[in-house]
Amino acid sequence: MVLAQVVALALAVALTRRIRFAPALRGVLVIPMVLSGIVVAYVFAFLFSNTLPALATSVGFGPLEASILGDPDLAWLAIVIVSAWQTIPGALLVYTAGLTAIPAEVYEASSLDGATAWKQFRLITLPLITGFVLINTILGVKGYLGAYDVIVGLTAGGPGTATSSVAMTIFSGFTGGDYAYQMANATIFFIVTVVISLIQLGVTRGRSVRL
Image (cartoon, rainbow, N blue to C red; front, side, top):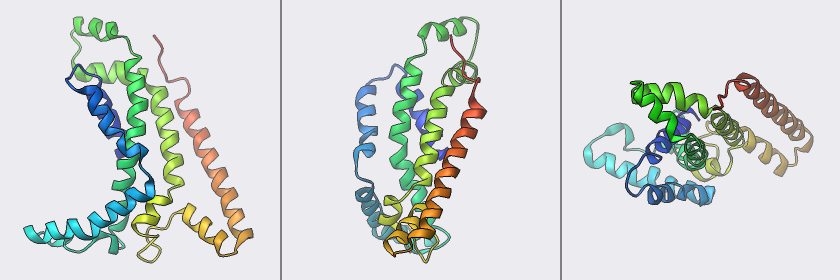
C-alpha cells in the first residue's frame, strides 16, 4: 500500500506541473482503474508464468526462469505488483484533486523567499493535502484487506495457502457450508476494519492545514 501511495503521489506531482500532454497522460494512467480485476489478474498471470520466465531464460537470469506464482516465498510479490498497478490510478486522481486545489500564489511566494522544490513539497504540499492522504490511506487499507479477485486470478490462494487472504477464507467457508464460523470471521473482519479506520482518523485529525 505504501508503494502505491508513494508512486501515485509522485505521478500526481509530476502531472500537475506545466508539462506537455499532461491531460493525455492522466487519461492513460487511469485505464487500469476501469478494467476488471479478474481480467487484469489473468493477464498478469500469463505474463508471470510465460513471458517473464522466457525473458529471464533468454538473458540467463536464473531466479526468474521459473514462474514466481509457483514459489511460496515470491508469489505474494506478484500480488503486490498487480494490486499496486490497479490501485495507483484511483489514488492518483485523489492526489491530483488535492494538488490542483492549492493556489499557485503560495508556491510563487515561497519561491520569492528562496524555498527549493523539496522545501515546497515538504512544508507546503504535504501539509495541505493531508486530508487527501487520509482518504487514500483509508481506501487503500479497505481495498487490501478485502483483496479477492486479483488473488483468485493470479494464484487462487496458492501455492498451498501462501497467498490466501481473509476475504478468500471467508468466501470459501461460506461456499463450503461453514456459515457460522465464517460469519464470526466476517464480523471480526468488519470490526478490525472499523477500528483501523478510526485510528487513522484519530492520528490525522487536526493535522491538515488550511489557507
